[in-house]
Length: 245
Image (tube, rainbow, N blue to C red; front, side, top):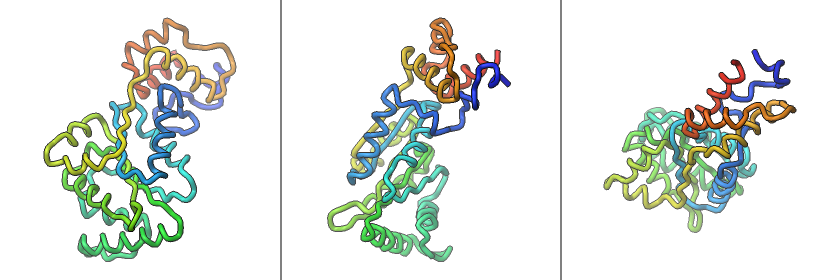
């Protein structure tokens, strides 16, 4: 509705992730580079946590695009998978022929054989698990077991957990200590501070094609900061409604 008025080629503040609008400020870019390093250097399980609407899914999507071609990426977005379901999901993604009634032990063996085959061909497999905080405890335990799949010298499967801050509370439970001990890197997406919000708004506008002076003045940024608590999803909603008004 307001695109022509502001000279925009597309909507700048959609809440669905669009990797062309990835904001590398507020430590997002540094976190992305650290994730790529951790994954490509065989660093075991990695965890990324943040509040609802802090940009975890956007970071995950950009990570998928930026990983080297040798990396086979599997994205799991369904947190309600059972421990057997996650094995079937991995088998399906890696095109492993298994019967629907196959036991977990057979699935694991077939999975390990396929991973060894990919490793021998110079490929690396990483599983990106979104909404990990909502996974059943037994599925998280299965993730720990999957992290044990390795060759003589290297991990065969890299795992990255993306979850809300509740994930940290879950991993603090005594029964989760073995999984927690296998997490080699912890990243937290903090809310944006006021200066970052101003840069974020300007960046998104220009990424959408805007070429004029900054639309959001200091007073507007101050109000958006207060109302959004620095969470990018809220910022997008407020900025969109502001342009509409």
